[in-house]
Amino acid sequence: AQSVAQPEDQVNVAEGNPLTVKCTYSVSGNPYLFWYVQYPNRGLQFLLKYITGDNLVKGSYGFEAEFNKSQTSFHLKKPSALVSDSALYFCAVRDITGGSYIPTFGRGTSLIVHP
Amino acid sequence: DADVTQTPRNRITKTGKRIMLECSQTKGHDRMYWYRQDPGLGLRLIYYSFDVKDINKGEISDGYSVSRQAQAKFSLSLESAIPNQTALYFCATSDPTEGGDGYTFGSGTRLTVV
Image 1 (cartoon, helix red, strand yellow):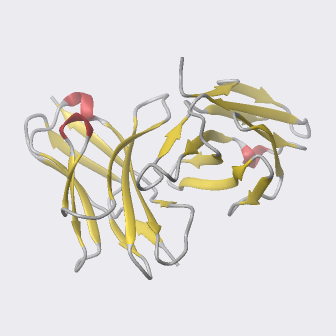
Image 2: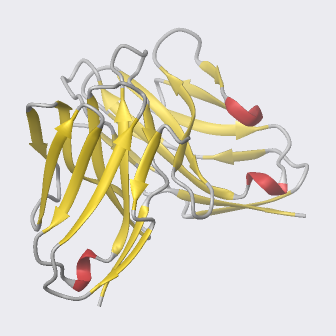
C-alpha cells in the first residue's frame, strides 16, 4: 500500500524568505516521488521528481526537494520565495517495488507568499 | 496548442442529465487518466487506461463511465449527473518510458450539477 500526507493545509511566508512545503509518504518498497503545482484556474504542472540517485532534486522555478528515506519525507523547498509562487502544491508517491502503476496524491498545500 | 486539451472548460448541467467531458492529447502517450479534484480532498482517480483496449476503474468510478476512442482521446461520461459530482475534473497522460512516469495534466473542466 502507498500513501502520502501533506500535514499543512496552508503555508504562509514573506517574499524573500525561504519556504518549505512538507510531504511524508508510506510505501512497502521503494518510492518514486513527485511535486506538482497548480496555479489558479490551471491544471497541475510537474515541478520535480525523485527516482533514484542524489537525495537533493532540483526542479522548475528554483524549487528543490530532499528525499529523506529514514524520515520518509520529501519536503519541497525554495531559498527565496516570490509572490508568484503562491499556488496549490501537491506531493505524489508511487510504490515501484510494491507493484503500483498509479501514484497517490496528497491533499495539497496552499502556499501564500506575502509581499 | 496545449499537450492535453479538455473540453468544455466550464459546464453547468441539471440533475439527471447525461454529460460527456472530452480529453485529447498530443504527447503520443498510451496512458491516460481521469481525476476529480474537490477542496481538501486532493485528486482522486476515477478511471485510467494504459492503452486503447485497456480500461480500469479507479477509486471513485461509481456514477462514471469512460471511452478510449483512440490513443489520443479519452472521454468521461456522467450517465445521470447528481449534485455531489460537482467538482473540477482533470485529464492527464503519462509515459512510463520517461523515468518515473510523470503526468501531464489538462487545464481542467469545472462541472456544476444543479
